[in-house]
Length: 406
Image (cartoon, rainbow, N blue to C red; front, top):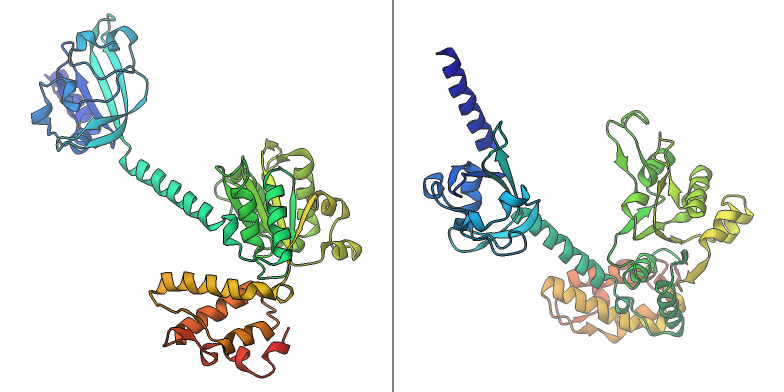
């Protein structure tokens, strides 16, 4: 009696375990009839256990079974012949008629004598994962749109040279050094190089080298193993590994310490990295693009930047002109920012007045394109008509000596 009670208890325990699983699980007997249907199958398919029991798996109208539509008759199904279907992405038809993306796996079950007792199938609902994939794809498309070449605004001769350099850099895999003052759009140029290159379908990973102290930057770039330092409670991959197959953009490269410079030089030479606290070398396939607002050549002369690293980074230099040296682009940039802010705010500002444009053309723009964009955004907050006037501008632009700053 005790053994019989134990058997009943074990069966009940197994049933509870199967019912608690996130994946759908159902069992077919030798005739292809459903004899078990867990709660996740009810959720995924819309059919209750009462509705499913005794039915064939044709109930699910699986889109793929050994490369064909699922046969209604299990004797015609190759599962008994193959023993397992392997994990396959397919679609099941929900009770309400819509398709559910799933990963489905089937295996035969044999008794102690090797005779087939039935088939157990597991079903993983891919709906949320597919949504996440779609969102990631949409985000990638938006990022690609953001970094399109025509989003870098300017028709001046100096900007035409920049466009030419971007196209040439995108067509190669050479290391690029982008040099320019703060606010000139170096990150946009790095993005345009990546998204116009053969690596565009792989990651573009950005690291601001001035944002972290040396010890944290080392871990950020190279990753670490568990216990590598105090607080390293779990291993993590670094930015080099995240960018594998794609592009790593190192912004403010002139801020790197001598120690990190040595490690970066080794990566450029050997195409391998070592996580902090680990001696194992890991191969990485990345294209490195760097940017700085400093004169790296002068930094080399002052002993603050390694000469060998400088020449490794300066394979293909791109110099971005400051806004004060391409003032003919200011009307075009202003129009671009107005259109973008109109779309964002719902306003219908047409243009800036002549007086405002005169101020813009006289000002030296020490903050470059970013400062111009901020000025237009400031004006949008105050502007009450369809045209930006001087009183809508930031105070430092309206002052008589505003154009002398910077």
